[in-house]
Amino acid sequence: MSALFEPCTLREVTIPNRIWMPPMCQYSAAPEGPLAGVPHDWHFAHYAARATGGAGLVVVEATAVSPEGRISPYDLGIWNDIQAEAFRRITGFLSAQGTVPAIQLAHAGRKASTERPWKGGGPLGPLEHGWQPLAPSPVAFDDAHPVPDELTVDGIRRIVERFAAAARRALDAGFEIAEIHGAHGYLIHEFLSPHSNHRTDAYGGPYENRTRFALEVVDAVRAVWPDDKPLFFRISATDWLAEGGWTPDDTVRFARELHAQGIDLLYVSTGGNASGARIPVGPGYQVPFAARVKAETPMPVAAVGLITEAGQAAKIIANGEADAVLLGRELLRNPSWPRLAARELGGAVRVPEQYHRSV
Ligand code: FNR
Image (cartoon, rainbow, N blue to C red; front, side, top):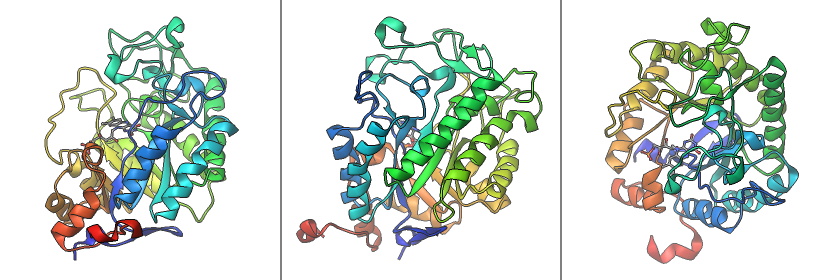
């Protein structure tokens, strides 16, 4: 049987297989008022379908630790108790199906305050539920985005506290795993990369300073996240820039440090921080970056990005390139992909009793 269908234990949490759903924003929450950032029927149906389809782990989409940390005004949030309480319906259902519920904690930095992608995705002003974004340096993502406000050291400290408060609420909401979003050109990645971080204080300049904010967030979250529960970090392994960006060598070095700070799994994306980057997108194009971290560090890794075929996924695990695979758009197309992959490869995932006649 393919190792895809073997359980994966991290700390005291056992994930029943290695086919996982990565976070994917639904941009479907209310933009303001008492229900701002609160998950509702759409989110429940969306996550429930992937649990009944057999995914071993479902990572709830980028969920903002503060209102100005949302990518769009329609993002989920976990900065108040109403939001945390509403997640219980999702975590309870996922857990009852044997799927481990995880949540990605996020701050969008200079890429905040944008329209939903299907409405163009452009920056939004204050009259359209938008706000002024914050970032390490007053450098716009591209010509279409506004110049963000530079965070003060006090502002940085407050965001670190927001991540910790969000993790505490995520725990109350029933999540088994928290994930810190350090990828795709959002706030933490903006600090890591010299392309977006031009600071001259303790948070900018050399590698040790650019990684400081990320490590402070990791420490603050790890301090409130129980020892028996795993903590993940998502990273963009490269900015895809010839010079002046975050590099795969930086990622390997940082993976060792994150492992020492109590991160239990790194999942490895690329890009998102440099508007001019040229990215050679193709099947499994990010897998080599995950494989390199796995080969050169003690950190467990998950691979993501254009993994769509059962045989391809099984090979990534069999070759030791990653400990798990994450399928994004393929699970949007087909929530039952894990069940069909099990049938194709002769493995098994949990099938709800109600569906026993379809096994
Ligand atoms: C994403 N992605 C993403 N990544 C992330 O870290 N947090 C997020 O909230 C989102 N949101 C999101 C929304 C939608 C609609 C898509 C399609 C993607 C990226 C996602 O997790 C994944 O890395 C990519 O989709 C690549 O994997 P696939 O789709 O090729 O399997």
